[in-house]
Amino acid sequence: MKKLLILCLLSITNLTLADNGVYAVNDVCNGFGCFPGDTSGFPITITNSGSYRLTSNLVSSSTTDNVIEITADNVTLDLNGFSIIGPRTCTGDNDTLACTNSGMTASGVVANGRKNIVVKNGITQGFDTGVSLTSSGQRGNTVHHINSSQNEFGITLINGVISDSVANRNLNTGFSNGLFGALIIKNSYASGNAQFSAIAITCSNVFFINNADDNCVRYTNESTCGTSACP
Image 1 (cartoon, helix red, strand yellow):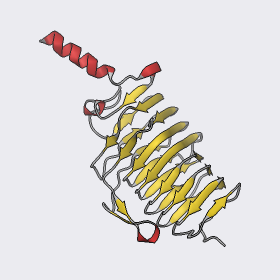
Image 2 (tube, one colour):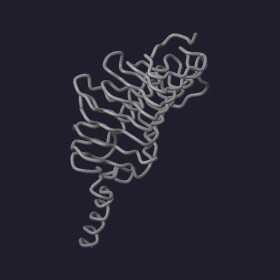
Image 3 (tube, rainbow, N blue to C red):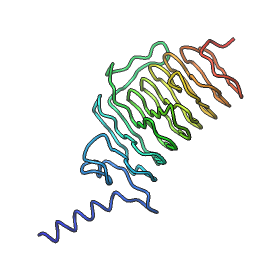
Image 4 (cartoon, rainbow, N blue to C red):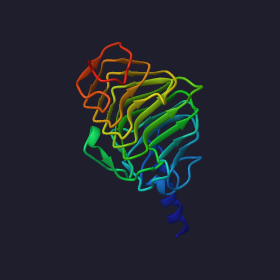
């Protein structure tokens, strides 16, 4: 019996390590802690530099607990085509947008005061903020190929780059620099957001349509992001 128990535990533990030394993150390991420094349940906490990859969707019903918190520098989190989903749902868009769970504080992915964080390749939906990388004194943070919708804020990033991403039907802002800091948005799309499409330093090849601040089609190319309506 003891041997069988040890073998079972080893089998579960092996689920936390994906190929080539990349740590796997999934709903199974969330039940007991996905890697050193993490404990069972949300938030899944990344305390060591390295590469991490979702191997399943992560669904949370909590309005107060973040799903993934990154507390180390030099971390790459690959959502690997999967989704991080919170309890907020929305109907309508733009000035008709109405969402559940008003005042919730839970976010999908959070890294505060960290540098060289990459979050890529997936969906964040139903939170206060889908992806929040608020590092006012740090540099090198990137969000790439993320679709973030039905949040208060889609993606908030201070001092970094958002590329090839989508922010739609968020209650406040699609893409935001947190009202300060350098944010560059490239090759991205914002639609149906209830207040602002984007607040950033520079936009390059970004398409805005049907946002509350911009109720017409606007395509920016190497221009400064604004929040006023299109001419």
